[in-house]
Image (cartoon, rainbow, N blue to C red):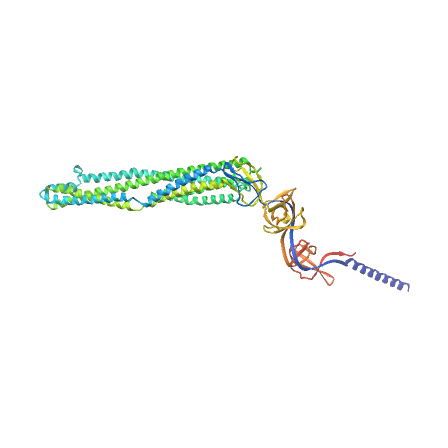
Amino acid sequence: MAMKKTIVISLGAAVLLAVIYYFSRGRETESAYTTDTARVESLVQTVSETGTVRPAQSVQLSFPLAGRLVLLPAKTGEAVVAGQVLAELDQAGLLIKEKEATAVLAGVQSELAKLAAGASSEDISVSEANLSQMEVNYQAGLKELSAIRQAGEENVAQAEKSWKDLSENNPDNITPTEQAVVKAEDNLKNTLLVDGQDFADKRQIGLNSAEARLAEINTALDKIQIIFDDEDARYLLGAQEPSLVDQAKQAKLAAAAGQGLASAKLAAAKNSRESAPAQEALDIGLALLDQTFRALNLVYQVLENSIPSAAFTALELEAYKTGISVQLTTIAQGTSALKTAEQNFKKADLIYTTNKNSAENSLKEAQAAWRAALNAAENSLASACLAANQQLAAAQSKVDNAREAAAVARANLAKIKSPARAEDLSLLAARIDQAQAGLETIRHQKQESRLAAPFAGVIKNVFFEIGEQVSAGVPIVELFSEDSFAIDLDVSETDIAKLAVGQAAIITLDAFGDDVKLVGAVAEIEPAETVLQEVIYYRTKVNFQADGQPVKSGLTANVAITTAQKDQVLLVPMRAVIQKPEGKFIRVLRAGQAVEKPVQTGLISDGGRVEIISGLSAGETVITAIKNNQ
């Protein structure tokens, strides 16, 4: 009995321990959950920063040229509208130059009109009278030839001798008509040798000059590229007038694009002996010089509007300006040299062509005269007019000369009556364009001598008085916008990826309290970072209008930028999302048990709730925290 009792007690103790262990183990694994409900709501995401108000636009206005102030209506503190004249320089000298340029233009236009009108009626009358006289002479020669032929039939022997002299080509007994042919041949050879060589020399000089100019253009464009490639100056070039940078780059690209064509035309001209390819190469070279000069001039303006810094010193800026000035001078001198070479080439071409044509015509006339004399001798011999053969030949020559003279007179009359050559008209048209450009330059200078407000605003400072002499680029008036303001914000690198230009912003000013809200927008985000106390920020500019509020520069502003907004999206608290190596999960409470579900998340709202794109349904209970009971 005692053993059975001992066994029963032992079994009871074991069962009791098992029960205690079971309940103790159950309490250790029992968990308490903190939950929330997945709900469909609107999501708003903002980035909030604090900054200082400043005018949206502020500029110091200056003249691009020097002069004496004669008009200065601008007053400190005065409100002005866009386009309102704030200052003006003395234009007396420019007015005189404008009159001179106008007179030059009118003179060239009159010259063109005269050339286009052609010869006067008096010149035509003289040429017609000359032609009439040549025709009378020709008819008289024909009559004389007929009389001589009738009177000299007995002189057949003499006529035969004359015919032999003309037909046998005996150098010991050469006739005047043969001498004329030999002389005309020698004259043509001399023209081809002398004038042709001068034409070739002037053509080669022109092409050599064009080749030298291409090298100068290449050097100039390289100088420009060095400036634009300067990393220290990249954001300082043209800082006062950014639009000039794009203009200068475009002008440089246009000039660079023309180099290939100019080189190709120059190579083609070198491989040709004709005038046209050389003229085309010179014209294209001059046009490319003009493009390069314009590009250099714009780059100089960019440098004039650049700002030096510690990395890009004023000394470096001046060195660039000096280099561009040297290139401007080189290109201008090269243009003048190429124009001179082109003019010399055209002159040599004209002389060569004219003299060659004249020599060829003279040779044709001499050969025609020789053939006419030979024909006359043959006719005299055939008609047995031996005694009159020489007189008949002379008479025939006279007739032929008269006929040629009449032909020349007829050609001269046709030439006088013909319209002006296209080349001459083009030359005068180019001179008109040049005179017009000079006049427009002066008128542009007149415009530049008047300083106008680029935008509506308030005058902050006036630095000069009427009558003072001012230099180019020296500030005359300082102007800032009155109703348009900007706020510069330093946004941390954790938020900068959310921002974009154009995003709306709500602005409150400490001076007005939270009840006054102004609306603005992100206007600019600097691409480069700003390091403040070893923390990376990105300078962001927000523009806004005062909307009737007495906003002042320097006020503290609180800016909330709306970076994202969605309606009717599924949201859960951020702490409900679990990040694992294989993805993101959410624990859902089902029948008192936690069940993990993979999800795809989206944006995070300002309230700390995260968008669930997939993997969860509205109304499900999500676990945000688990507390185990011990």
